[in-house]
Length: 189
Image 1 (cartoon, helix red, strand yellow):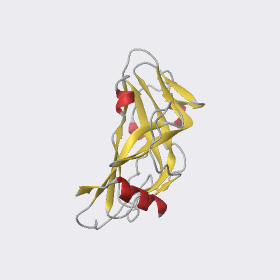
Image 2 (cartoon, one colour):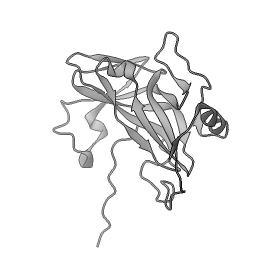
Image 3 (cartoon, helix red, strand yellow):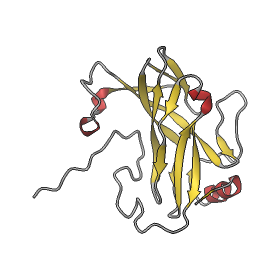
């Protein structure tokens, strides 16, 4: 399995893998985004869901609700101390069948106590990325809309998978907005 280069990312984006697409790395005055040597730094949109610990008794992925979050839209978002927000990428991704992509948080944010969860994009998954952004600091943290939040690394498989995310009709396929945790219900007997 090999890591794909900037040349491959640019060619694949021209075929619709990433839209909108920034073909160079933008970094002056902003947290960088766009193509890097072996990855793509995706941005977050200006829509956020800020976790509200006052309305949630616990954080149970099987019983999560929009009520656990406060909707917020803005150029910056304040993450409360020891809390998190959900956001979505600016970019819409369409992952090829022979590729697995993985996101990693940017070190600029990590140095401020802000961590982004590691998220895989399975073969043939597509959509806007819903991403959890955590503030581990004991003080509020600021994140910036339309700037870089995480780097996406593209790994080419040595063999095509038998069943892709699209084949199994994954529960997060083609998501257009910030999507809460979903659990597929058991079939009735």
